[in-house]
Image (cartoon, rainbow, N blue to C red; front, side, top):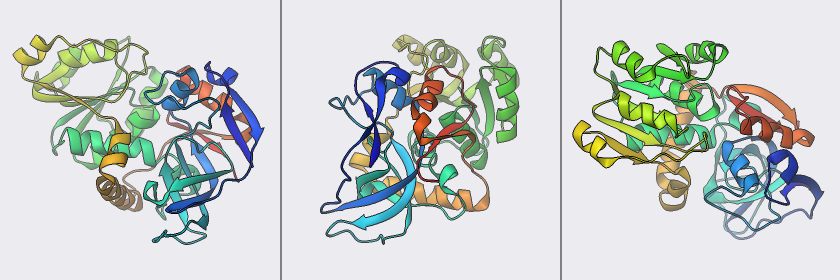
Amino acid sequence: MRAWHVTRHAEPENALELVEVEDPTAHAGEVLVQVAAVAANFPDVLLSRGQYQVRPELPFIPGIEFAGTVRALGPGVEGFAVGDRVVGGKIGVLSELAVLPAADLHPTPDALDDIAASGLMIAYQTAWFALHRRAALQAGEWLLVHAAAGGVGAATVQLGVAAGAHVIAVVGSDAKAAVARDLGAEHVLVRGVDDIPARVKEITGRHGADVIFDPVGGSAFEASTRSVAFEGRIVVIGFASGEIPTLKTNVALVKNFAVLGLYWALYSQQRPDLVAEAHEQLTHLAASGAIRPLVDEVVPFERAPEAIQKLAGGQTTGRVVIEVAP
């Protein structure tokens, strides 16, 4: 089969090499999947650079989120059959075939084709756990979403709207502002143009944002600490800005807010039952039309480095999907 390898730590366009490798085999408890589509994620950028919290030994196959079809079952696997459409999330799926533990796979919602479904697992699971497990978002609360036109940000806006929250989106340009409004955001602020804390206080009648979703870090986090409401919750997802902020804990003390971390992969490792519950809820929301992954561009398998490099440059709106098997 063909697979993309990270052969050295560098920018994605320089780190990735297309190679021929032996077809993998499903062992006990595993499933062999024909990969149909892989959604590019910012962790793929960090994996290429050697900056992700997990650092596989070189060379390795990147790609962490995909949709495909079951091709073979290892001994002891139940609940799946050859031909089933599945989605999953695990490092090492940017290839024509992939082997995953059965526990890391879930049925593809009937409402989504493989291109859309490839972006369901990581982004929507991250957004779901951030809003519902970590922050306990309630209907009627104010939700502030940074990078709201990106893959995980767009998922968060949709899930916030579905939960009955009042969503304030922060985006990087006027063009992306239109996307956030189409996703359901009631108010849209443009980073570098709007004074985010001042505008949040104005929009909310000085109440502030009850829940803040931050995959950016840096100055976005600093703006969050000035925008958060009394007993508000800031959920830290990542640091796409490249800057890990420092929190002065006295600020959290005097303003009575909480800072919550979310690394979704820990749930898949330690509480797979919660991941399955979240997937069931997301499947219902997809069937109702409340959520649908926002796909910016579909590129062929041979152009995978280009797709991941676009994420590195912050040039994307929604998801860039790599089509492996049309």
